[in-house]
Amino acid sequence: MAHGDKSNEKVVFVGDSRVRKGKGFIVPPDYTAYPGKSEAFIPNFLLKEWMVGVVVLVGFLALTIAEPAPLGYPANPNANIIPMPDWYFLFLYQFLKLPYASGQYVAFGILGVPGVAFLSLLLAPFLDKGKERRFYRRPVASSLMILSLISLFYLTNVSWTHYQNELKATGQVPEHIQREEEAREKRAKGLPTSSAIQQKEIAIVDKEDTAMETFKKAGCVACHAADLKGAAGPSLRGVGDKHNKDEIMKIIKEGYEGKMPPQYDNMIAQGITDKEIDHLADWLSKQKAAK
Image (cartoon, rainbow, N blue to C red; front, top):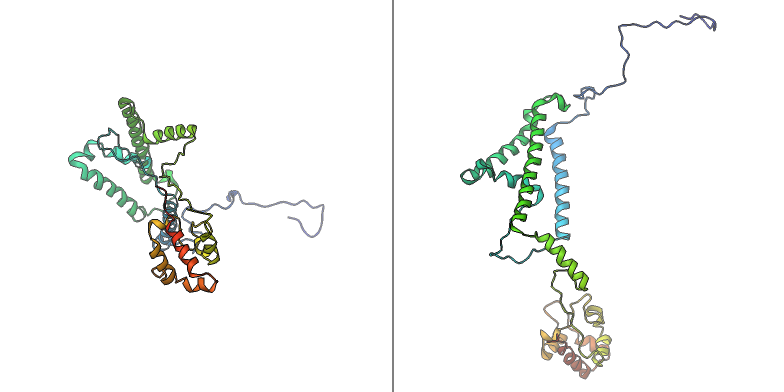
């Protein structure tokens, strides 16, 4: 050891060979060095998992409302089709084909095995209370998980392979491929590719009639728009198919089912005469869809 401030004196560090060189701070696997940093599985951790599940479920619901599932082809009881579930149920679909999960054992296949699997996952936190978190030191839990994953991949592959072989044997074409081919042909011909029913737009009858000016002067465009397609109110195109002239005149004077207030007094205040109002009602009664 050095004494005083002499710079030329040799410095000797004294150590203990019994103390091993550390490799930095190692987090213990059971987190015992962090008192208060861990939390109970029930209810704290489980409540968080449920909240995340609720958010995901709401997201799925919003997606299904925004993008509804497309309709398939009309059902044909005489068609020779091969029913297939979605890809994430293929393993279960194939499992239910096994001898001891179908036929007279179908109750065991649809309730017994899935019930045991669900119950095992539910009880896992209570049965596996070990502090070890490394998977290779948890042989039972790790082996069961690996076997489950292998089973899922195997059953899914077998189900899909069998489905492809059945398609080749029967010469069938899956519905989604038929849709793609039909859409491609329609696109080449310049036809609409959507399967939705195309509604023909109803045209305005006698668009140049003077009643159109009365319609605008009365302020009807605020609710029904200048093109009669409707804005805050309903469309008046084709209104003649629903109401005749007398009924339209009654709506102008008395309103319509609480949805539209009377407009007669307002029209008179705008300087519109009874003759013009009568002509407007007659013109609206002529707004019919072309046959």
